[in-house]
Image (cartoon, rainbow over all chains, first blue to last red; front, side, top):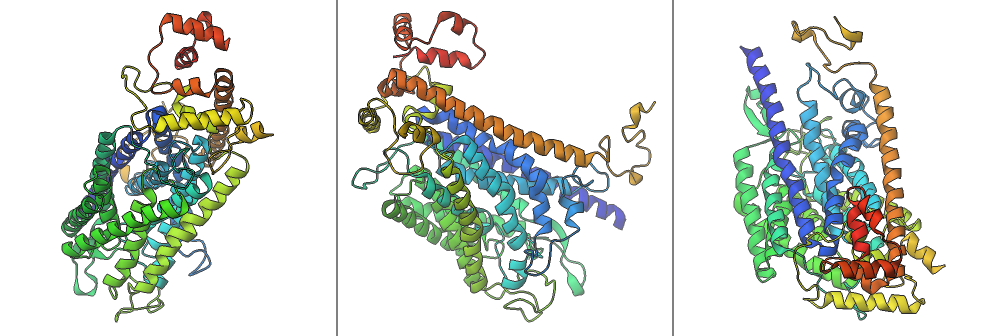
Length: 492
Length: 115
């Protein structure tokens, strides 16, 4: 009987993660719809293809090396130990467990659950840099983030044996930092090197609004992301585990650190943090639909670090506070540093995620972070010798996620691509629209005036200036930001 | 008959079965092949993208940015007269080319002819 129950548990767990993968697919659908809605009509199909190609490119690279990194690098290496040799058996692409195997029912679905997080991370960056990034450059960032940096941070801070958990007491149950802050940091780095879209900032630095071509699509996209987020939350848990310890068996769901929580509890907190975020964003944005829905997302993201343990009203308040931080910082950074984040991804994911990790360190101060690999070796310990969650560990953890693993590698790669002129599309292509030559009009049967906001007229003035300045050649001298190889060639 | 000994010829004792896929032992070769294909795909994609921009810029230089920007979302469908006039202007379009274009290329040929 015990053997049968054990088998049932394994097969239930296999099915559980399989279902989360299906649900999480909706996150990607949502991101695609949302990004396409934000893009102007001249960029619709290029924007769609950019997002869609995340799926095969990140999937293949995550199979080839991403999954191995998760098992190989919890110790750093060089911080709490070396590269873990057993990682080859679990995650190397030639391992027998990386395929249909009658003795392993978990590896594939667990791999897929993490892979869907990878798509999400890459999609977060995708939205921020629309309408001017080269597809080839973006796909390199997608691999960097989706199959390298995020999975390294997961090995460090989202694994019961990760050095950040074991030493710092880092706690981030639903990936405020592990997914969202690292993706936000990556997006910010790319945006700095890439530069704003043509016309986003006026000659005196004034910020102009580039309106979405379809507000409803952006809203439906965000609602789809909410839906997929349920799968994301479920996938962050182990559904059934004996957490009884010395007092006998006690079966419960656990978080990724194998510490107990309940699906019921996280359901409270998911919805309450979503609601807190929406309420705050509604007020701040004066009922703007795009920001109200983005605020819901930012609310969940802020509370996610501790949503395995918070009271629902704590989750609501933390979610609301995170939205205030994200919204205010978004517009401050936009004005002050001329960062053109087309969808507010750095704010909603990066700033909210960072803030959420820091808050969790204070609110959950003293809770056990994970079972110790070596009792008492953490900076702060519980009375039983478990690494304890604490503000310092989570603050440093947030910096590592956003800055060290998110910002720095992406900034280096962006600089490298920029050096070869392979980061941004030529200015003339950007002005004409990324769809124009390759795809054409995405809505051939709709007749509307593109000059509704007066923005396209301004683009035409810029285009004429470019033509006149170099005797008909397109030199791409304006505005600031990365220059394509084609524009550099024209300037010579 | 076990065709070429691909791996399994019986499911009668599933507890003893490990991998289910054919040709176990060739995994490393498959990984090398996949890595090569992946790198090759990225190279082809970047070359194709560079070529696409070169072609687009060439066209935009010939027709001017004002018209290039009209090729996009705000363009109205062209009449036959418009198409002929634009073809004469850019000097690149022709009926036979449009008649023999592959899927996807037709759009591009048509767009070249719009005002």
